[in-house]
Length: 159
Length: 159
DNA sequence: CAATATAAAGATAATAATGTCTTCAAATCT
DNA sequence: AGATTTGAAGACATTATTATCTTTATATTG
Figure 1 (cartoon, rainbow over the protein chains, first blue to last red):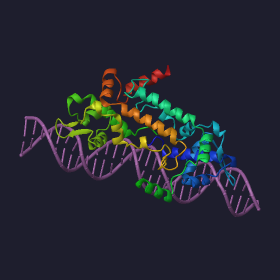
Figure 2: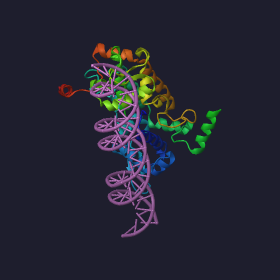
Figure 3: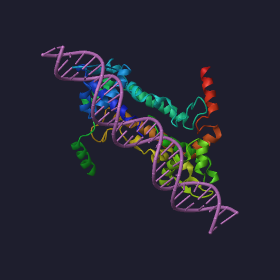
Figure 4: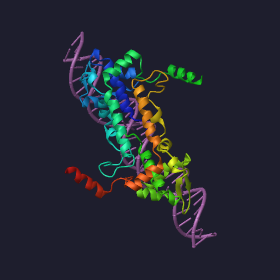
């Protein structure tokens, strides 16, 4: 298990990319998918969840695409996560017991309740504008490695 | 997405129960499954992963069952999680980018690296003996609610 | 040795997540 | 108006997860 589903991770990566291109208005999803090495149709579906939540605006036709509906410095990562994976990670019992805490708590209840609050804060702090700026300015990465980079990485591990 | 897979959660709940019964020697998986309201066959498969990792000892035949191979106060929750879900949650990039950090980091790299260490510590601190004792002494819960309890919970919400 | 109880292994099914492909609807451009 | 570009919607395929059922192997008991 990973913390976030693949759909969610794709949605986050795409969101940061779209934020980094926001000065160019509507960005075609095909361009985002190409940049991030994702399936365009699959990404379209994922981004629709953001459109349905009014996080993204979409526009059909030539010069169409998607862009964020609000100031990206005000859009927090947790909104993207909530729209795609839902908020269960931040509200549910770690042992999946319904009513945990309200009714008899599970043995992890207290430590997990505290921890998931911290986890939530982590994603509440991060806004798309800052993340996009970091990517631009520090050369951070949003896409998977290409073949050459994988080879480089492997040979550097051997040393 | 939940933090842990269902298999892992079942494995954890069963482990705490088995630890709480350890004075009785080998505990039949059928008994564990009945107590926790789980499918016995499915639970058998999950616990096999713990047996394969030498966390559990198993014994066939009458008076057989499973019990922990080591002092349960020395067995940490993270060992159960690692055996069932693997350690990716505690080692991998939150955006699923291979080589993140070694190579170009993703924009969440630093905050997530710190956070997953804290998460790991949470599960490294919890040992089965203490968890089992808490369940016994404080009436904590390992199983899902039965029908009556669900109704009680719903009616209390309405107030 | 026979009956029984148990974990292990395997077959199969159901469901959810992931991914691809096709068609449709709307907007733009000439 | 017709061609083109784009997001939306839907059909379908693949894979992983969750779950059930059957069979097998092994140990115990009488």
